[in-house]
Length: 75
Image (tube, rainbow, N blue to C red; front, top):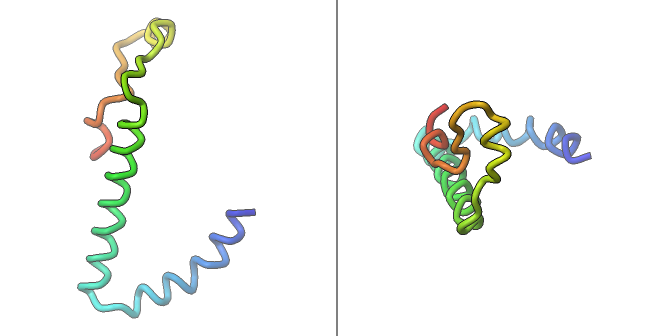
């Protein structure tokens, strides 16, 4: 049901956002980007010293490191 709430709110929010000045729009995008970066950093920090089980590494067949922040900023 959350997707329905999102779809219902999307159009009015986009309409409102388009009416804002360019500075507000850029600030909004910058704020959203900073929020995503902070959320990712907090999620990683909450793992503490957790390690990937060795069986996961073996099953992957190649070197994996999903806990690195390297791919978090670019894909």
